[in-house]
Image 1 (spheres, one colour):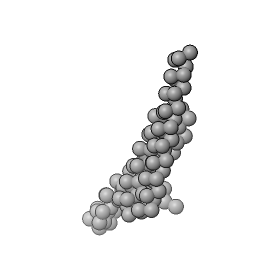
Image 2 (cartoon, rainbow, N blue to C red; image 1 turned 45 degrees about the horizontal axis):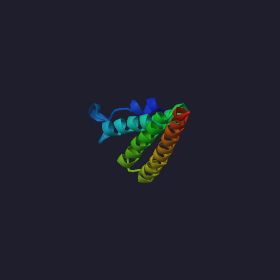
Image 3 (tube, rainbow, N blue to C red; image 1 turned 45 degrees about the vertical axis):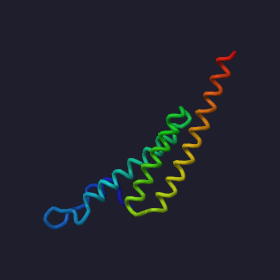
Image 4 (tube, one colour; image 1 turned 135 degrees about the horizontal axis):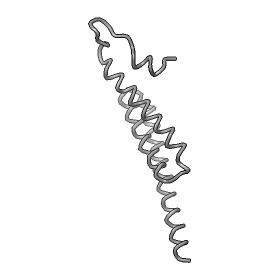
Length: 107
């Protein structure tokens, strides 16, 4: 399995070039790693607040964009679905927090 360092420091071809689209592929790889890393981070932080649920939804959309850009459309579709699930969770949690706040203020 290739490491991230190995992907980022791939040997150059003749004339110091990485080949057709090598630089673009590297940028896409870094974008994908960052998007999926953000998903994991925000998913782990979801219990800390609704803003992390919303951030997770955004990271899922970034991962979906990555999937579509590299031609892995099934991955992109699944990430769009996960983003919708996360947005629904965010909406419900936000509504529940506001309702709990309204009940607490009425007492």
